Length: 507
Picture 1: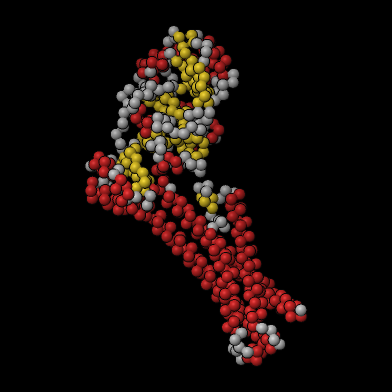
Picture 2: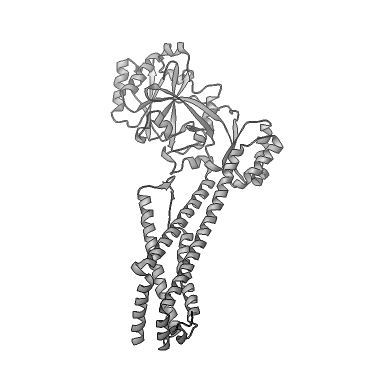
């Protein structure tokens, strides 16, 4: 009983002594663990972010514009053995698109876009929740002709708030002045017809700083000789008035009032159908018009859209099967970036196709940085472990020299070496665990604050994260290392007999 009381008192006094004056050793260890774990968390988060970016189709996507011997290259590159050889995950034949669109006060803007396959993996990445601001409910189909536009383009057009985004974007196309004047066709400016194109989604960014992307079906219809988007060619244009509204309450009566005022002869029964393929759920209203000239219908349509908010005039374009638009470029999505350089050499040697080396070097750099980040993590762990080991050894050595006489005395009174080693192991482990716990708590608070204020990479990657197995492996290693270092050091020190310790002959 007396021995237990002595060991507890001895352990308590030794713990206070080892903490140092004003707990200086505790603060040193706390600073070391804060820096080590914080640096490890940051580097691990950076490694995860690089891995995420390397797997991102935005990064793994390489575009090769049309060049010499392009058709033979295009034919051969889709062969399964070639795709396997260079780890090509997906191949698309796409086109560049340039369009003019209208914004506030009918101001026209030049935009750049490209086509994309409706089932593309890149499209999945573009429309994921981290990149999408708003999108329609319906999935994209192979006969979609809507656009996916950027938030920046919508702001240029005058729409700052997502709640104010229109359901359609106004693409402009030149028309014949005589027909425009004769039929009172609404124009954006001068002789530019307003061609409403449905918005599929508004996203934060698109590859290559594009303003919009559109399914291939859109371009095929635009290039078709039938010219589906040229409205006066549609028979329905002269007999139907189609409107899109988000809320039908009180709208029908207002439309009827305007049509009556304009003297339009129309069917009082309006066909109304729910439209899931618009940016927000809406309704399409089809009004059948009798014995009215197209100029009167256009005047009535303008009166409706000018006087009733959130009403759009739309058209069921007279789409043909669509011609196959000649390809401008081929896009490749690589599963393994290390194969890109070999692919570029093969394309040049076999077909004279040159791949932009800047793209290749940029992608290879991702692998290099990822390797460096991994090496940095290992270096941080090794250096931290070495520092803690050396710090503990010097601390034990200095403390042992200071109390060697006292240790010799209590050993002479019969206190076993195993008990002394056990006491010091508990003392040093207690100090280490206190320091580690304080460091983890501090970093946890910092991580929580980062999350609360939204300080993340692209909305998903934290700058620091305790939820990482490497970080916790390091945290677990430190106490185990402490127990080993303390036990080994004290065992070596206590090889001396009590007389040597009392008279300091062990030095």
